[in-house]
Length: 257
Image (cartoon, rainbow, N blue to C red; front, side, top):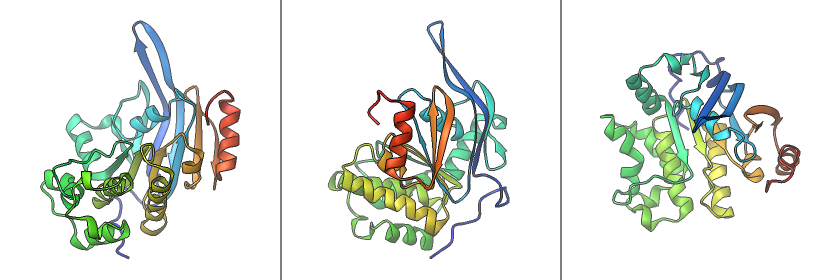
């Protein structure tokens, strides 16, 4: 196993990501909607954290603020020891490119490029060459060695999401944010991707934050944080699907969780 490069700019005991009193208010035609209400959270290094909650609870907004994809109305978010609010637009872009990985529900693969070209595209655009040993490790770990010359339309949904995972892992980011990564997959392919994410945490020391509505998906995490009405209302350590479902029913008894 080839170890990941050490995280940039912070000793190991610091959280991979931090939120302090994050508030996000949307102006909906003169009517203000509070998506986040003074949320504080530490995302531990080398852990798999799931964020759950009813529709409109603020879980995606929290992830976007932590990842620097959106700015809070007040409060602060850090990646390691870097306060995202203190970065210029260019610095924030470089932070997202160099130190953060993203996996989305839509795979965001370019259909005209091969699997290998899709995996290495972010580094190519940055003018960087991937570490060949690490590239090989990622490809083998994710079971893509026999698919490198294929293009996305020739792959199953699970295989396409594996390519997206490989792309996120290649730059050895400090943290990966995954937004409903199994939402477009059947149960078998979804379980496959979740096992791969879990393995990247346990074997590679990766830090992952995943937003999901699925109790089964959340059970792969080390910790589940529950939001309701823009606030953290509970959390579970070493969750099971049944325990997650019980918690979801408490916060959203009329929902489909």
